[in-house]
Length: 324
Image 1: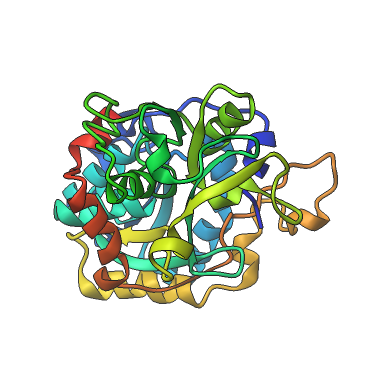
Image 2: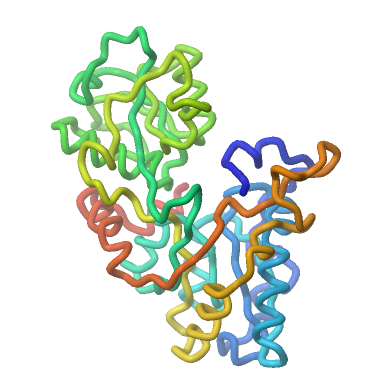
């Protein structure tokens, strides 16, 4: 299974394209989702375009096999999370993979319905952490007042949304974050999980707010860093639900169920990418292209209500996705 670090090694990066630039532009999408004979499967731009096309190729093939002559499946690569929700909300996309934060905002705006939850690294949930260097005198979240914090992408659940919630919970003002650090009790920067963590390690930030996965070595936290907050350990043992797949509100219940059933019963081979081999068995001269997740199960709004609650507590809406 691909780790978040694996994709950084992938070569041949292609620039993110807007929906109107994709093969099969918005003007040619059917006005009736799925019933026009095409299932538009939209991918959020979390990794390079050509890499994700390889990763999700077997997903396309599996869905085509399961749906038979009912519809043909097309993969679409969106320019940003906002484009994903716009596509779903308008019915020009039928199903999409996205992050829990974007999905929560999409549900709030009536632009998406929760369909499936993904499993990765043996779990259906994960956690957010705030870490500092081992030699730091910072001992608690409240000590971060006046400090510099490196966050992941502003729309990341584990690298932005949940850390901001933890900061607010401990009495710090978050101001206009994550759009900016105006009015906040700290100086914030937003980039990616790996970049934010490296910023801390290089001494350019006092703390990093990231997904725990990026901080781990073979035996726990990598040398030189330690946590001062862990959402799952310190606040909610249920953690953050792993990223969902969502469907268009315009999709009929019958068609939605057909997609959900096809994916939940998929064979292991669907997760192995274009080369059909587990990353652990992929030769060095080939790109590791496993999907980062290894299973899916049906999910509902209830599963992601905690994410929606956190977004509400921070006063966030889909406007954030437009500015990301």
